[in-house]
Length: 490
Image (cartoon, rainbow, N blue to C red; front, side, top):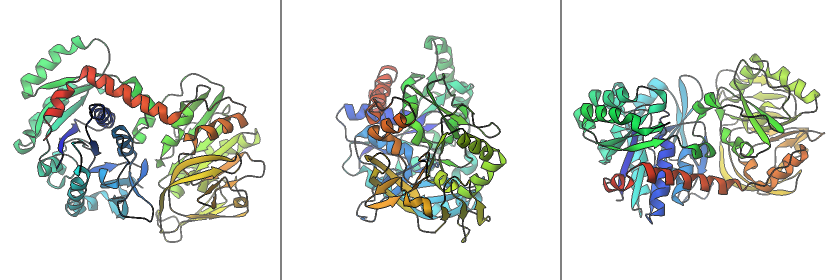
């Protein structure tokens, strides 16, 4: 079995995902065969990964582990994230185990389910370590959630079972970092506390020497060693985000030649589809929160994926975005709907089996002459395709329920594995597709922006992600004692 080290946070969104990705890249640069692992993830940003021995397609993992696999220079595997929770409502989620749909569970029911899921976690843990020198594990939430400890599979429940030492991550940007680290030490049971070999401070801004007294205080309270203080990592903004919590902090930035408006759906999924557009120097991507209108000066509206198409469609109307979208179209604006967003653009969305919930039919936005029927079987696969309007290659993936038919599908947006996909309006200004990742194709993105009167496509987006990973790794080598962290792996 490979040696391993685990990063756990004093809370959610402390930057564990980027730190693990950076450490994975740093280890790779040292010549180590390194792999990422996250026992349990909760996110609607999913990726398609290989299922060893399965020729039928692929399975789902968190997009964070997909990014971490890139940092390691290896193909993503479903075993890197054996349990993925995809929230559908405020109290329930779809449960994905080793890439495949396992069931749906309300939060209370899921707690009771965890015992049987630990077997899958440990099975995947053994598979990920095969042939590796080092595995870097990411926790979820915080080990200080002691009310959930008895059934935990994401933090100390896993660390103690797999005997993996833990580095605790504190986020100084949100304030109270001394209390969060010392408080974690205080309330952990001794069995868990002894798994922690030290801590690091993340997202520091300014003169780090001003925190010297803070580090001394933490050592006094905990006795733990500090592996370093990581500054605010600017390169992290060029990496795909893990989940929708970051959307609340996204600013539109300075005005540019093309404004792209993206409604922040309640169950928004795979919104990193927009990252390649954000990287374009002439494009301003604006995520529009509920209660705010779609900007009238947007040249393009992108309706992203959704984990709950009908529920988000109803909220879309409640926000008045349907009226904004119609006004946008009357001004000659362009619209792209991806996956759930594509389904919303049609005349109706029907869910006769109640797969998404109690509402079995909803009127669509009516910008495409198609209708969608939800079906139990989910399509999950990586694909190579070709854009029909621009006759250029595409690469991406599909993760969706439902079948969409209607007259506008006679004008497909793409051909995927020889099969026509999506739909285009008669004037060519409304495009729907089930394919995620289409804007990542540099040639297509350039031509698409040209059709909107914007020069673009000069960026190699995948190379930009690789450079950002290198920059994060270099910063971690500068500000962390990476040698010590790797040496403590066992």
